[in-house]
Amino acid sequence: MAREIYLTGNERFFEDDEIIVSKTDLKGRITYANDVFLRIAGYKEKEIFGQPHSIIRHPDMPRAVFSLLWSTISKKKEIFAYVINRCKNGDHYWVNAHVTPSFNANGEIISYHSNRRVPDQQIIKKHIIPLYQELLKIEQSTSNKKQGMQDAEQRLLQILEQNNIEYDEFIATLAA
Image: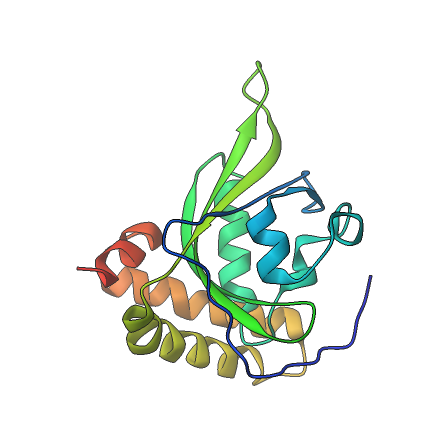
């Protein structure tokens, strides 16, 4: 379901005690979205179910971070990440996402589950936005989108290596 990217520049917020929840199948198609997700993103269940989760992807969100996310969860690991999402009407909202695989009785991944909480706005402004701007600049530096994403992911991995930490630890240390 391709749609034109329209951005309003308006940021939406949700309450500290609210959690945005969604579930997807193995291909990232939405199979569940809670009321908070639907309200903030501006969708009805019938519009969102079966759609790729990327329907809410904001163009300021580096593809390299999603590449790392998918790589991590496909290895049966969880991941935490700051994400900017786009609402149906073009507004946006930031989340601190916790994405986990769900398993069957044989330990095989059968779906993915994501809980999103209110992010620390100071971390977003001080650390995440500058990092994402750097990664986006790398992604956009070549006409080959795949190569740009790979180059940006390499830069992200280089940052992690320089700090001798994993991505989750890096995200956690931003709050320290």
